[in-house]
Length: 135
Image (tube, rainbow, N blue to C red; front, side):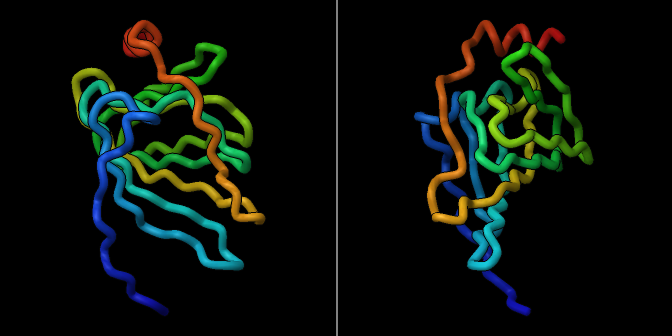
């Protein structure tokens, strides 16, 4: 067993997020584990860019109300205790609803070759985000 210290929180980069997002790394697996876990906190209206994960991603909401959207226009409104599983290769985005904060644990796996498991794409437009909030 190993007790690890709390990692510092960093602001999410503008290249991959819209609005103010804060990321606290929780776990970075060391072989044979490839698990990566972060606590991600979104201010109202903040969200990720469109992206996908080579081996999928699991989101577990801890606080607030959020949105998770996919390219087919599906949007799920998530609340504390909800878990969303995004399958490998599915282009999606997630963030806070317009009027509340939202926090979730983001869990994924690194690739066996050490490559980046996340493919970042373009920002979610304000129009896409506003339509998602109305659903």
